[in-house]
Length: 124
Image 1 (cartoon, one colour):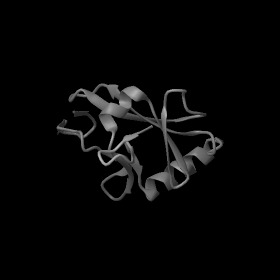
Image 2 (tube, rainbow, N blue to C red; image 1 turned 30 degrees about the vertical axis):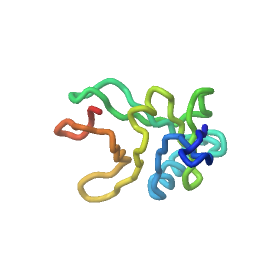
Image 3 (cartoon, rainbow, N blue to C red; image 1 turned 90 degrees about the vertical axis):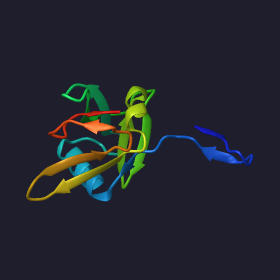
């Protein structure tokens, strides 16, 4: 999707989702362990109702994107986002953290105005 910019040229108006290299490597490794073809399958990133702040993130592997998904490709990983979730997570960055305190995927979302105390849910 594109739109005209103010100077008359073309500007890409597509909302962005960034995936760090460590997150993409970890997700691709998990995709492979599930026996999925990473040229078609991908990681679905979505928002769902729940948690004490109202919304929470969800992730799962899908064999292929839905017709209305926005598809991102970063570091060899395909990421599928449905239209309803995109409005909450556009501009976000998916990272993978591994350390003594915690290990796992983490979404850095610039749209969040508050999070619950445990960090599992958010509000925009």
